Image 1 (cartoon, helix red, strand yellow):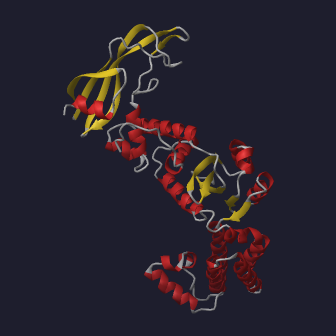
Image 2: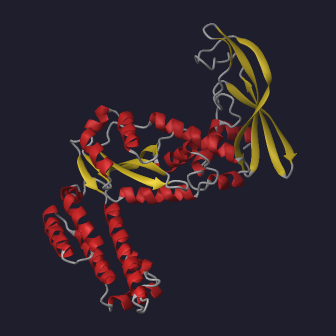
Image 3: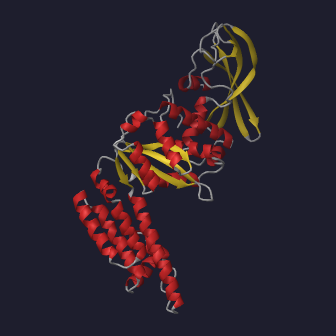
Amino acid sequence: MQLKSILNFVQPHQGFVYGAVHQRNKGQRTVLDIEIRPRKNRQPVCSRCGKPGPGYDTLPVRRFEFVPLWGIAVFFLYAMRRVSCPSCGVKVEQVPWATGKNHLTTTYAWFLARWARRLSWKEVGQVFQTSWDNVFRSVKMAVAWGLAHRDLDTITAIGIDEIAWKKGHKYLTLVYQIDAGCKRLLWVGKERTQKTLRQFFKEFGKERTAHLRFICSDMWKPYLRIVAEVAGQAMHILDRFHVMTHFGKAVDKVRATEARELKAKGQEPVLTGSRWCLLKRPEHLTEKQSIKLNELLAINLKTVRAYLLKEEFQFFWRYATAGWAARFLDAWCKRTMRSRIIPMKKIAKMLRSHRELLLNWFRTKGQVALGAVEGFNNKAKVTSRKAYGFRNFEVMKIALYHTLGNLPEPEATHRFC
């Protein structure tokens, strides 16, 4: 099968035919130049209105980069015609393999965009011997198409979260769809402010917001206030991951305070090097950390009592119903308030003040993908760490939509990856 036959099979272009094929060397790369010409009596199509019209003149030959075949760079060569359009005037024709002034074929742009979900943009450029800018433009094109064609009318559950971005306590606000049957990134906002979240609901629309049944977030007061104001009909759920983050901070505060007290009294610094033993889940500890933790548990310290309270609260999430979970919560808070450990008492007060929102976690089981927010948060952080060349917010936003947005793609005659 000749090359032109393969191209006609995987990439046919109505109204155009493949012509001569030329092989050349560019440095150490082999390049195939494939001529394209319009069929006889085929009028050019206006790039503005999409209607055919008489030809006006022909421009110099342009080169369009296609998907590499067997590691060989492939370029389409075509002399663009200008159309004398009765409605729009003289315009450059529309061609099916590329748009506007883009020198990449649409097929190659989608090819790069799909690979950019699997590898960093820098690695995609290196593997396919193209520039970072070409990969970025391809991803930007894919995201723009996906956002324009996605369906937002069946969403009943969303999760609100944030990730740190760049240095200096800069954050991005992320909103996800967390319906049991569909999980994806819906929206990216700059900074973590009341204005940011209000902007999401404004863009999402009043009608869609009215259809929301569940909203999951952390305990940040502006989130709680805005959700109650804008989507009061929705059941508000507190995210488990963010709740347990408060426990870790409280235990660490107790440890740091007690370590200073032991040092001031001239006692053995038993808490030195114990931070991660106390903050990590027991199943994630290294052998050395497990030994250290067991040594600490044998000592009567405030830090140990705070740690045991934290680990005991993990049983809260194992209950099947809100009723039994409420009994456990009330009993745990009562014991903790008697512990005389101030940071843990603050945790108990916080949980009591958000009691109903905590119990909503159990009332929505099976209806909402409750672990999705934490999972998306981790993936967003990985995307941020892989951000070779993500110089500004707009680029980062595109990367997050591309990786987590589950965006639709157009139907194609042939998918190259």
